[in-house]
Image 1 (cartoon, helix red, strand yellow):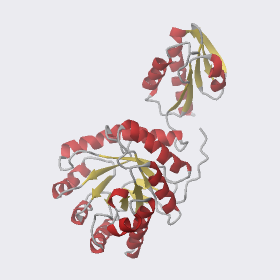
Image 2: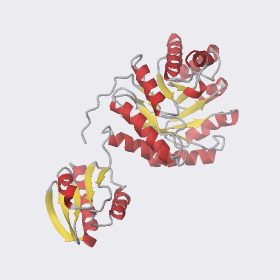
Image 3: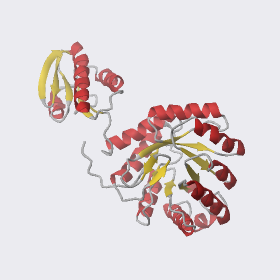
Image 4: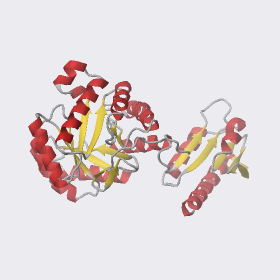
Length: 358
Protein backbone atom coordinates (compact mmCIF):
# COMPACT_ATOMS: atom_id res chain seq x y z
CA UNK A 1 0.00 0.00 0.00
CA UNK A 2 1.46 3.36 -1.04
CA UNK A 3 1.63 6.23 1.44
CA UNK A 4 1.13 9.57 -0.29
CA UNK A 5 0.03 11.43 2.85
CA UNK A 6 2.14 14.48 3.66
CA UNK A 7 1.95 15.02 7.40
CA UNK A 8 1.68 18.51 8.80
CA UNK A 9 5.09 19.50 10.22
CA UNK A 10 4.89 19.57 14.03
CA UNK A 11 7.22 20.07 16.95
CA UNK A 12 8.69 16.82 18.30
CA UNK A 13 8.24 16.14 21.98
CA UNK A 14 8.86 13.03 24.07
CA UNK A 15 6.51 11.16 26.38
CA UNK A 16 8.99 8.96 28.17
CA UNK A 17 10.97 7.31 25.38
CA UNK A 18 8.20 7.70 22.79
CA UNK A 19 8.60 10.55 20.31
CA UNK A 20 5.44 12.46 19.40
CA UNK A 21 5.31 14.76 16.38
CA UNK A 22 7.95 15.67 13.84
CA UNK A 23 8.98 12.62 11.84
CA UNK A 24 7.99 10.16 14.60
CA UNK A 25 5.49 7.39 13.81
CA UNK A 26 1.91 8.10 14.84
CA UNK A 27 1.46 6.47 18.24
CA UNK A 28 -1.61 4.65 19.57
CA UNK A 29 -2.71 5.15 23.15
CA UNK A 30 -5.32 3.84 25.54
CA UNK A 31 -6.44 4.46 29.12
CA UNK A 32 -6.95 2.07 32.01
CA UNK A 33 -10.42 1.82 33.56
CA UNK A 34 -9.35 0.44 36.93
CA UNK A 35 -9.21 2.52 40.08
CA UNK A 36 -5.61 3.70 39.85
CA UNK A 37 -5.26 3.25 43.59
CA UNK A 38 -5.73 -0.48 42.93
CA UNK A 39 -2.12 -0.95 41.90
CA UNK A 40 -2.31 -4.63 41.01
CA UNK A 41 -5.32 -4.29 38.72
CA UNK A 42 -3.95 -1.15 37.08
CA UNK A 43 -0.59 -2.78 36.38
CA UNK A 44 -2.34 -5.82 34.88
CA UNK A 45 -4.32 -3.59 32.53
CA UNK A 46 -1.19 -1.71 31.51
CA UNK A 47 0.56 -5.00 30.78
CA UNK A 48 -2.40 -6.13 28.66
CA UNK A 49 -2.23 -2.90 26.69
CA UNK A 50 1.53 -3.27 26.26
CA UNK A 51 1.03 -6.78 24.88
CA UNK A 52 -1.71 -5.47 22.56
CA UNK A 53 0.73 -2.95 21.08
CA UNK A 54 -0.02 0.29 22.90
CA UNK A 55 2.69 2.95 22.77
CA UNK A 56 1.49 5.06 25.70
CA UNK A 57 -1.05 4.57 28.49
CA UNK A 58 -3.06 7.12 30.46
CA UNK A 59 -4.37 6.60 33.98
CA UNK A 60 -7.00 8.53 35.89
CA UNK A 61 -5.84 10.46 38.93
CA UNK A 62 -9.05 11.52 40.69
CA UNK A 63 -7.79 11.51 44.27
CA UNK A 64 -4.75 11.46 46.53
CA UNK A 65 -4.74 7.65 46.74
CA UNK A 66 -4.43 7.41 42.96
CA UNK A 67 -1.69 10.04 42.86
CA UNK A 68 0.31 8.25 45.54
CA UNK A 69 -0.02 4.91 43.68
CA UNK A 70 1.69 6.25 40.56
CA UNK A 71 5.25 5.76 41.78
CA UNK A 72 4.72 2.03 42.39
CA UNK A 73 2.80 1.60 39.14
CA UNK A 74 5.55 3.31 37.17
CA UNK A 75 8.15 0.99 38.68
CA UNK A 76 6.25 -2.01 37.32
CA UNK A 77 5.75 -0.96 33.69
CA UNK A 78 7.93 0.19 30.83
CA UNK A 79 5.10 1.94 28.97
CA UNK A 80 5.17 5.74 29.17
CA UNK A 81 2.59 6.86 31.70
CA UNK A 82 0.28 9.89 31.37
CA UNK A 83 -1.54 11.21 34.44
CA UNK A 84 -5.08 12.42 33.71
CA UNK A 85 -5.88 15.33 36.01
CA UNK A 86 -9.20 17.10 36.56
CA UNK A 87 -10.26 19.72 39.12
CA UNK A 88 -7.42 19.32 41.64
CA UNK A 89 -4.11 20.70 40.39
CA UNK A 90 -2.31 19.45 43.50
CA UNK A 91 -2.73 15.91 42.21
CA UNK A 92 -0.75 16.94 39.13
CA UNK A 93 2.08 18.14 41.36
CA UNK A 94 2.26 14.72 43.03
CA UNK A 95 1.88 12.85 39.73
CA UNK A 96 4.68 14.85 38.13
CA UNK A 97 7.16 13.12 40.43
CA UNK A 98 6.46 9.73 38.79
CA UNK A 99 4.85 9.93 35.34
CA UNK A 100 6.01 10.87 31.84
CA UNK A 101 3.32 13.41 30.92
CA UNK A 102 0.55 15.42 32.58
CA UNK A 103 -2.83 15.85 30.92
CA UNK A 104 -4.93 18.74 32.20
CA UNK A 105 -8.34 19.97 31.09
CA UNK A 106 -8.28 23.78 31.16
CA UNK A 107 -12.04 23.81 31.60
CA UNK A 108 -11.89 22.39 35.10
CA UNK A 109 -8.32 22.68 36.41
CA UNK A 110 -8.87 26.11 37.98
CA UNK A 111 -7.27 29.54 37.83
CA UNK A 112 -4.05 30.62 36.14
CA UNK A 113 -2.00 30.33 39.28
CA UNK A 114 -2.84 26.63 39.57
CA UNK A 115 -1.87 26.04 35.95
CA UNK A 116 1.39 27.92 36.58
CA UNK A 117 2.20 25.57 39.46
CA UNK A 118 1.65 22.55 37.20
CA UNK A 119 3.86 24.09 34.53
CA UNK A 120 6.61 24.70 37.06
CA UNK A 121 6.51 21.08 38.23
CA UNK A 122 6.65 19.79 34.64
CA UNK A 123 9.52 22.11 33.76
CA UNK A 124 11.55 20.82 36.69
CA UNK A 125 11.15 17.22 35.49
CA UNK A 126 11.18 17.85 31.73
CA UNK A 127 7.63 16.54 31.29
CA UNK A 128 5.30 17.53 28.46
CA UNK A 129 1.76 18.75 29.10
CA UNK A 130 -1.25 17.69 27.09
CA UNK A 131 -3.89 20.39 26.90
CA UNK A 132 -7.03 18.31 26.70
CA UNK A 133 -10.03 20.34 25.58
CA UNK A 134 -13.40 18.58 25.69
CA UNK A 135 -16.49 20.11 24.12
CA UNK A 136 -18.59 19.14 27.13
CA UNK A 137 -16.39 20.90 29.69
CA UNK A 138 -15.29 24.22 28.22
CA UNK A 139 -14.42 27.16 30.43
CA UNK A 140 -17.52 29.27 31.02
CA UNK A 141 -16.21 32.28 29.11
CA UNK A 142 -15.79 30.22 25.94
CA UNK A 143 -19.00 28.24 26.30
CA UNK A 144 -21.01 31.40 27.02
CA UNK A 145 -19.61 33.11 23.93
CA UNK A 146 -19.43 30.24 21.44
CA UNK A 147 -21.49 27.42 22.92
CA UNK A 148 -20.30 23.83 22.76
CA UNK A 149 -18.88 24.31 19.27
CA UNK A 150 -15.68 23.65 17.40
CA UNK A 151 -14.91 27.36 17.61
CA UNK A 152 -15.33 27.25 21.37
CA UNK A 153 -12.89 24.36 21.65
CA UNK A 154 -10.34 26.09 19.42
CA UNK A 155 -10.56 29.37 21.33
CA UNK A 156 -10.06 27.50 24.62
CA UNK A 157 -7.07 25.58 23.28
CA UNK A 158 -5.48 28.67 21.74
CA UNK A 159 -5.91 30.66 24.93
CA UNK A 160 -4.32 27.95 27.06
CA UNK A 161 -1.50 27.30 24.61
CA UNK A 162 -0.60 31.00 24.71
CA UNK A 163 -0.77 31.03 28.49
CA UNK A 164 1.69 28.13 28.70
CA UNK A 165 3.91 29.86 26.16
CA UNK A 166 3.82 33.04 28.29
CA UNK A 167 5.14 30.90 31.13
CA UNK A 168 8.01 29.78 28.89
CA UNK A 169 6.60 26.29 28.36
CA UNK A 170 6.40 24.75 24.88
CA UNK A 171 6.54 20.97 25.39
CA UNK A 172 2.85 20.78 24.55
CA UNK A 173 0.48 18.46 22.77
CA UNK A 174 -3.17 19.26 22.22
CA UNK A 175 -6.43 17.36 21.96
CA UNK A 176 -9.81 18.75 20.90
CA UNK A 177 -12.49 16.17 21.52
CA UNK A 178 -16.22 16.15 20.94
CA UNK A 179 -18.54 13.14 20.99
CA UNK A 180 -19.45 13.54 17.33
CA UNK A 181 -17.48 13.43 14.12
CA UNK A 182 -18.28 16.84 12.64
CA UNK A 183 -17.27 19.05 15.57
CA UNK A 184 -14.17 16.95 16.21
CA UNK A 185 -12.89 17.23 12.65
CA UNK A 186 -13.80 20.89 12.34
CA UNK A 187 -11.97 21.80 15.55
CA UNK A 188 -8.75 19.98 14.68
CA UNK A 189 -8.66 21.47 11.18
CA UNK A 190 -9.35 24.96 12.51
CA UNK A 191 -6.59 24.84 15.13
CA UNK A 192 -4.04 23.10 12.90
CA UNK A 193 -3.17 26.26 11.00
CA UNK A 194 -2.64 28.24 14.22
CA UNK A 195 0.38 26.44 15.74
CA UNK A 196 2.80 23.57 15.17
CA UNK A 197 2.28 21.55 18.34
CA UNK A 198 1.57 17.83 17.98
CA UNK A 199 -2.08 16.80 18.09
CA UNK A 200 -3.58 13.88 19.98
CA UNK A 201 -6.63 12.71 18.02
CA UNK A 202 -9.80 11.15 19.33
CA UNK A 203 -13.58 11.23 19.38
CA UNK A 204 -14.53 11.26 23.05
CA UNK A 205 -17.34 9.17 24.53
CA UNK A 206 -17.67 7.43 21.17
CA UNK A 207 -19.68 4.49 22.50
CA UNK A 208 -19.53 0.75 21.96
CA UNK A 209 -17.06 -1.07 19.73
CA UNK A 210 -19.43 -0.80 16.75
CA UNK A 211 -20.24 2.90 17.11
CA UNK A 212 -16.77 3.97 18.18
CA UNK A 213 -15.13 2.16 15.28
CA UNK A 214 -17.37 3.98 12.82
CA UNK A 215 -17.05 7.42 14.41
CA UNK A 216 -13.30 7.10 14.92
CA UNK A 217 -12.67 5.74 11.43
CA UNK A 218 -14.51 8.68 9.85
CA UNK A 219 -13.08 11.42 12.07
CA UNK A 220 -9.54 10.20 12.58
CA UNK A 221 -9.29 8.74 9.09
CA UNK A 222 -10.21 12.04 7.46
CA UNK A 223 -7.78 13.98 9.64
CA UNK A 224 -4.93 11.52 9.13
CA UNK A 225 -5.41 11.58 5.37
CA UNK A 226 -5.10 15.37 5.54
CA UNK A 227 -1.78 14.96 7.37
CA UNK A 228 -3.19 15.94 10.76
CA UNK A 229 -2.42 13.91 13.87
CA UNK A 230 0.61 12.68 15.78
CA UNK A 231 -0.92 10.35 18.37
CA UNK A 232 -4.41 8.91 18.84
CA UNK A 233 -6.85 7.04 21.03
CA UNK A 234 -9.98 5.14 20.04
CA UNK A 235 -12.45 5.62 22.90
CA UNK A 236 -14.49 2.43 23.26
CA UNK A 237 -16.94 1.38 25.94
CA UNK A 238 -15.46 -2.09 26.19
CA UNK A 239 -12.19 -4.00 25.98
CA UNK A 240 -9.03 -1.91 26.19
CA UNK A 241 -7.19 -4.10 23.70
CA UNK A 242 -9.84 -3.33 21.07
CA UNK A 243 -8.88 0.35 21.25
CA UNK A 244 -5.37 -0.56 20.15
CA UNK A 245 -6.58 -3.01 17.51
CA UNK A 246 -8.92 -0.46 15.90
CA UNK A 247 -6.33 2.31 16.12
CA UNK A 248 -3.69 0.20 14.42
CA UNK A 249 -6.18 -0.83 11.73
CA UNK A 250 -7.06 2.81 10.98
CA UNK A 251 -3.39 3.68 10.60
CA UNK A 252 -2.77 0.67 8.37
CA UNK A 253 -5.77 1.21 6.12
CA UNK A 254 -4.95 4.91 5.84
CA UNK A 255 -1.57 3.84 4.46
CA UNK A 256 0.33 5.38 7.37
CA UNK A 257 1.83 2.17 8.74
CA UNK A 258 2.91 -1.07 7.15
CA UNK A 259 2.39 -3.99 9.46
CA UNK A 260 0.57 -7.28 9.04
CA UNK A 261 -1.74 -8.53 6.34
CA UNK A 262 -4.09 -6.46 4.25
CA UNK A 263 -6.83 -9.02 3.64
CA UNK A 264 -8.89 -8.44 0.52
CA UNK A 265 -12.10 -10.49 0.42
CA UNK A 266 -15.23 -10.12 -1.65
CA UNK A 267 -18.67 -9.46 -0.23
CA UNK A 268 -20.92 -12.51 -0.01
CA UNK A 269 -23.20 -12.87 -3.03
CA UNK A 270 -24.91 -15.53 -5.09
CA UNK A 271 -21.78 -16.19 -7.16
CA UNK A 272 -19.52 -17.50 -4.41
CA UNK A 273 -18.44 -21.13 -4.71
CA UNK A 274 -17.22 -21.70 -1.12
CA UNK A 275 -17.94 -20.93 2.53
CA UNK A 276 -16.13 -17.62 2.26
CA UNK A 277 -17.10 -16.31 5.70
CA UNK A 278 -15.46 -19.27 7.41
CA UNK A 279 -12.44 -19.16 5.11
CA UNK A 280 -11.73 -15.48 5.79
CA UNK A 281 -12.22 -15.96 9.53
CA UNK A 282 -9.65 -18.75 9.48
CA UNK A 283 -7.22 -16.62 7.50
CA UNK A 284 -7.55 -13.80 10.05
CA UNK A 285 -7.08 -16.13 13.00
CA UNK A 286 -4.20 -18.14 11.58
CA UNK A 287 -2.22 -15.14 10.30
CA UNK A 288 -2.65 -12.66 13.15
CA UNK A 289 0.92 -13.36 14.31
CA UNK A 290 2.37 -12.15 10.99
CA UNK A 291 3.79 -8.62 11.14
CA UNK A 292 5.26 -8.54 7.64
CA UNK A 293 3.15 -6.28 5.39
CA UNK A 294 1.47 -8.37 2.68
CA UNK A 295 -1.58 -8.05 0.46
CA UNK A 296 -3.56 -11.29 0.40
CA UNK A 297 -6.78 -11.95 -1.49
CA UNK A 298 -9.50 -14.48 -0.63
CA UNK A 299 -12.13 -14.42 -3.38
CA UNK A 300 -15.21 -16.60 -3.67
CA UNK A 301 -15.57 -16.74 -7.46
CA UNK A 302 -13.66 -15.95 -10.63
CA UNK A 303 -15.46 -12.71 -11.52
CA UNK A 304 -13.11 -10.41 -9.59
CA UNK A 305 -10.63 -12.95 -8.27
CA UNK A 306 -8.11 -12.88 -11.10
CA UNK A 307 -8.08 -9.09 -11.23
CA UNK A 308 -7.51 -8.77 -7.50
CA UNK A 309 -4.87 -11.49 -7.60
CA UNK A 310 -2.70 -9.42 -9.91
CA UNK A 311 -1.91 -6.97 -7.11
CA UNK A 312 -1.89 -9.52 -4.27
CA UNK A 313 1.18 -11.22 -2.89
CA UNK A 314 -0.82 -14.42 -2.38
CA UNK A 315 -4.40 -15.13 -3.45
CA UNK A 316 -7.11 -17.79 -3.49
CA UNK A 317 -9.65 -17.89 -6.30
CA UNK A 318 -12.43 -20.36 -5.42
CA UNK A 319 -14.29 -22.15 -8.20
CA UNK A 320 -16.72 -25.07 -8.50
CA UNK A 321 -15.12 -27.84 -6.47
CA UNK A 322 -11.62 -26.53 -7.16
CA UNK A 323 -9.70 -23.31 -6.94
CA UNK A 324 -6.44 -21.57 -7.71
CA UNK A 325 -3.52 -20.43 -5.60
CA UNK A 326 -1.94 -17.36 -7.16
CA UNK A 327 1.28 -15.59 -6.20
CA UNK A 328 2.25 -12.23 -7.66
CA UNK A 329 -0.32 -12.75 -10.43
CA UNK A 330 0.99 -16.19 -11.41
CA UNK A 331 -1.05 -19.36 -10.82
CA UNK A 332 1.06 -21.84 -8.86
CA UNK A 333 -1.53 -24.50 -8.01
CA UNK A 334 -5.00 -25.76 -8.87
CA UNK A 335 -6.44 -27.82 -6.02
CA UNK A 336 -9.69 -29.29 -4.68
CA UNK A 337 -11.60 -26.83 -2.49
CA UNK A 338 -10.85 -28.68 0.73
CA UNK A 339 -7.09 -28.41 0.13
CA UNK A 340 -6.95 -24.76 -0.87
CA UNK A 341 -6.91 -22.98 2.44
CA UNK A 342 -4.04 -24.91 4.02
CA UNK A 343 -1.90 -24.49 0.91
CA UNK A 344 -2.78 -20.79 0.76
CA UNK A 345 -1.69 -20.31 4.37
CA UNK A 346 1.56 -22.16 3.72
CA UNK A 347 2.31 -19.79 0.85
CA UNK A 348 1.48 -16.76 2.99
CA UNK A 349 3.94 -17.94 5.64
CA UNK A 350 6.61 -18.50 2.98
CA UNK A 351 6.05 -15.06 1.48
CA UNK A 352 6.04 -13.36 4.88
CA UNK A 353 9.32 -15.02 5.84
CA UNK A 354 10.90 -14.14 2.51
CA UNK A 355 9.84 -10.49 2.70
CA UNK A 356 10.99 -10.21 6.32
CA UNK A 357 14.45 -11.55 5.44
CA UNK A 358 14.79 -9.22 2.49
